[in-house]
Image (cartoon, rainbow, N blue to C red; front, side, top):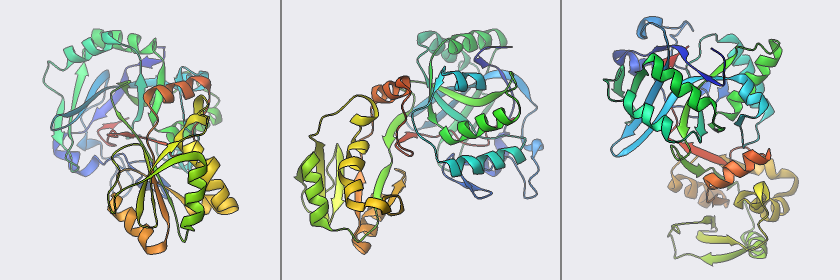
Length: 358
């Protein structure tokens, strides 16, 4: 079957084996490479296929649920041509070193257990087919070690083709997996651009995942007076109560105090209007100069704030908790062909690695 989205021939993990093979899709390290879950393999590196159901070619529904928090996506193959020709659009820059490491890793691992997460604007037809598929008992239903209940349904053949067709006519945006996509594109180029190549993806509606932002920590020591002065030149700065984290917007922790930052410089369209771009251009670059990359660390939202504040107190550094871009800003930037700095957006929950095995 041709087209952007098509059924994928996959093995689904057996519930009793999930604890051994399903891992959170975070910045885990596999073979020295960040960002890939290392499930589906035993200590020798061989795929433990006995822990997976026999392969079936289908479109699948995948749900993550914890309490009332529910996120439902469609798992299918997405043609790599779509990533090359702009039907699937990215919005973040990538690190060449990380891409090179993933290229080496993927070239040595024929079976793949991770998913690239996409957002789509396909609309209500997809929602109706997904809801119908979920009326049947799930193929697999288990709760992972991280507390997320994970369920998988196989979409009946005819409905699966309708679902693939509807999704294939939509525009898609990469939510999680920019580095994996870049590495896969590099391998595709190396192989001579085979027309049938595809990436295994989970496709969510535009509001199907939470959009958050990576934080930035500046290792100390930092001159607090100099930092405050730079902030005042580009932002309205409001000082919070001692020890109290402001509840919204972009915030900074400097010299034991939380500050709320409201940029006052002109917000251009696209990347230039992001809080992170304003911060880097007007504050971090003049503050740090040539050592900016060495001194600034991008930190996911999963790291407790108390831990980051303690680090700042210990070395005299500073912390920036950034307001995330909106979904509209993300789409606008991707549609313009622009890219945000690496580690700008943080979508969650992330699909687990090891639920499916190609």
